Amino acid sequence: MGFLMERLHVSVHAKAVGTNAAHSKTLRLHRGSPEAITSLEQPRLVVRPRVIWGALLLIGAVLALLDLLTAALYSTFGSEQVRRIFDVDDERSIPTWFSTLQLFVACQLLVVIAWVQATRRDRFAGMWWLLGAIFALLSMDEIAGIHEDSTLLTGAIGIRGPWVIGGAALVAVLGLLFIPFLRALPSTIARLFLLGAVIAMGGAIGVELLDTGSASHSHEFSWSGTFVTAIEEFLERTGFAIFVYALLIHIRDVIGLGALQLSKGKPEAEYHDTAAN
Image (tube, rainbow, N blue to C red; front, top):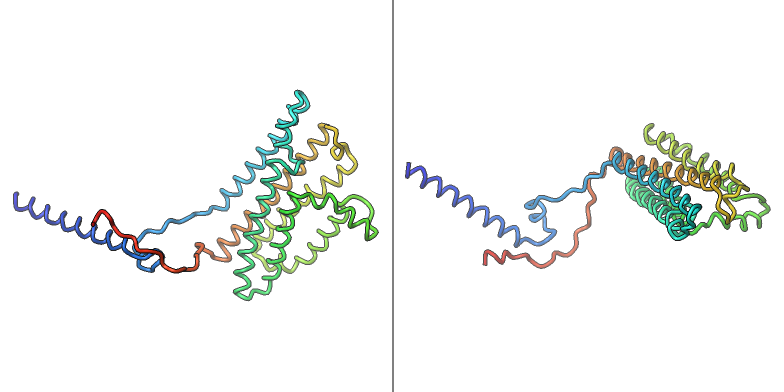
């Protein structure tokens, strides 16, 4: 029995020494060296498109409810500060910041896809770049309200009426331009793109056309204008959330980017196990 216990003690001691030696060797490796990368278990960032889509929809719904709640507080108690923070129709508000961020995320995903497709010499790489540029402009317009002053430009070229008329014409032209691009996409991605575009543009242009000339465009508070604007902004956020969801699925299933790899730089200083010394 004593012999077995002695052998067991020697075996455990040998394993401990081997583990410490391997740990000491790992700490002495250069950061970024192939040995360090293979010796240490690398953390992974798992992105689940359906979870992100659900989170975007939930945040959009919460912001819509907060918009209506603060509108009620404003109409009852005159709480202007709280109203401005959650007013979906104010450029200096949390909903506007969130919409801008959502559009910018879509822009970055499009840039990733466009770059990969360009390196693969895909014939529709230019269309991905164009979509990225469009979403970059949309994110800027969301925070700056450029479209609200577009009547100056349309009036200069002889087009009269609200901005949505020119916007609808532009959307129609872009829709025709992107038909071959959509036909080349997987059917699921194409359907999600179309669904997101219909919902977002239905909110941005369709609801705006129905609301043209109503009290929601004046500086006076009205519940009808508040509801219309809340529906408009909610539809826009929902449509763009669907678009982000489609882009994530496309990156996962079609592009095939399993992980984001950073280029190797100059190795940094060695790491030494001070405890071993």
